[in-house]
Length: 255
Image (cartoon, rainbow, N blue to C red; front, side, top):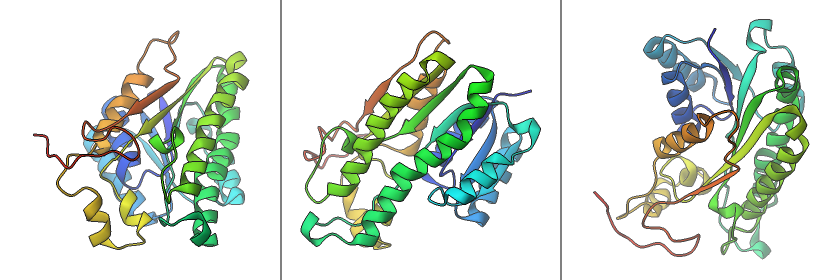
């Protein structure tokens, strides 16, 4: 039987690209997401293209009852999970702290931090039972340095960085590798969500420059995941060439 990986937030962007990459490497996949139709479309495409098995689970990682129910009741043949990719996450709004919108703050905290914790708690018994496995959390360059008007989003990704380090310590005795990827600017739905559907504002973020693409992150993740069992890549920061840090970007198209 193929190895099994669970990927959250798999309906688009980085999550979908990771699903495609692991499917190409003959992983069977448990994919989660909030958009049922989109999730099932992804699942159908992967099963058809790569001749693998896919178990789509529709739920919001912010809802611990749903997370616990769905991941606690997965069929026996899907419980041999070897890889957990905590990818679900988002930024909402771009405002100074004094102008922050409470609902935006709660969406980011509930998804980026609590959702990662809920899913990890539900999945860890499967990995611990096998005494092996790999967890890779998708963070952000915002986990390493804050930037103006990114206050709460940066705080949530700093939390992901710290939680990842704590997980690595706690799971050491269980032979479970724990790492994180922290991307800079990636052209996905990220900015469209941040600007609440304003496509003009979202497109300006990537205008006249070459950002990272979801496939770049999937390739980097596969490098981490495919290392020999005695190797754990704890932390990877990956940036587009046109971006030095959170605040310094040059408008340049790279062929």
